[in-house]
Image (cartoon, rainbow over all chains, first blue to last red; front, side, top):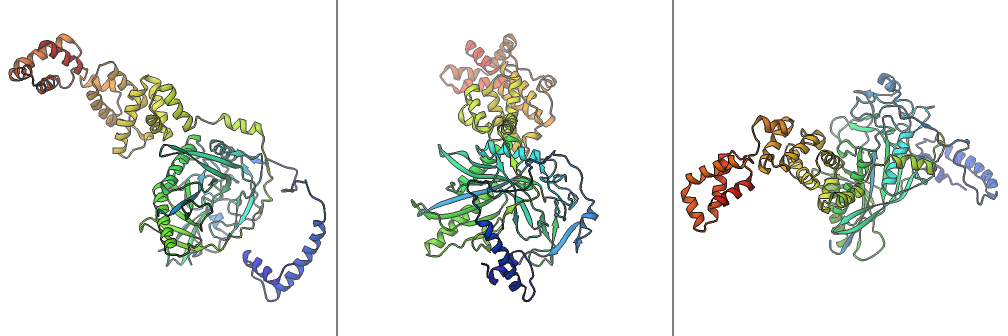
Length: 94
Length: 478
């Protein structure tokens, strides 16, 4: 079973800002999900390969061909800030 | 330091020479204007679907085979999650528990002994973007992101901790550089970042088995930086341990100017990257036919070429090693041999005059003004005795400066060696009659006088006389 502290840690790792009381609420909900998952754990899976992808596909490949890029204005259009053709972000050195 | 054994493992990234990125059709061209080579896939826009570049996969297999790796028929891609502005989608597509290549090795020649450095794995992943800072690093109000490099295909090669000294690390890196360049899958330019190296280093008491606490070194931007950074770090750790202190597990940056490593951020256990299979990329299923197809494109690798140079061309192991140490040099040498059959003479010229002259001007062999065909012509002129070895050096200098065919230079300058006996006899007689004292000295037992007379004949013919013939004629006359 998950503890509220673990949920808060997961939220931090995923950079999710939880509101007051949400950690408790999500702990309860996530534990419900885990309880259901316990049922699946009872299945015998020895000797079965894990399913990596549910689609019946392998080796989806493309030729090494340059097909063009976005015009730079468009690439930068949704950025909160940009400068000299670059995305501008809060400084990363602490 | 003598109480401790150094244990080093390297992580080397090489950028694969595809035209387009690993998962999208953006160009990989180096040096383009910032953010001019991006699209919804490499910028991580919602809905962008990655599709694997077939050429990148084949290049990775090729490199894996060249590094004696096992190529895993079943493999997949994973998301490695981290938050850093060099990657807009907040995860890097990499390979976690099923890498494409594993269990390889590179053999080194360490002080005459063969030493095997095991390769743990080599896997495909996408590169991240480039960050720069406005103003100086510490005072910068913000950082700037260029995403052109996002999604460029990388092969990450991870060694086992089998390397025992900074010098050995450099040797390994050199060898790896050479092998990868032979395969042609990467140009491995450390200065352009198409080859990058991080190093893990720890010390343990000499003779013991386990591993000490390691630090990870970054910012090693050249072969020399790898060796110097590791040497500094080994000394630093030894001092700490000798003083009874602990080595802190952390990432440290090599400061090339100051010649020291500095702690960057402490690593409390492993990062939580929360790897999980990339749902947008179906797994790979390779087979023997795939490998066979890639093997067909494999050129002769350095070790095999070195062996062939010794066995078939009769070169010394040293010469063979020097020639194969860079693919372009060995290619040049072999092209000379297409037009001239004296392997030993060609090897001497390529390793001596040619490489020396290039070095003097700071040129690479790719920019060499002397073509292999022209060098072969020069060697042929010398072999046939049309020019002496001393004259050949002069002609070579002229070839280097003008790019001309040696035959043309020799003709223009009237540089043909005098091998006509009668013509030389006349010169010899003239020299003898002009230097009666030297003739006396020689007859009186002074051998040095003979050398003087040879010199006078050479001077008289402006260096064009065949030296063997001059010696023979002088001896006859005296």
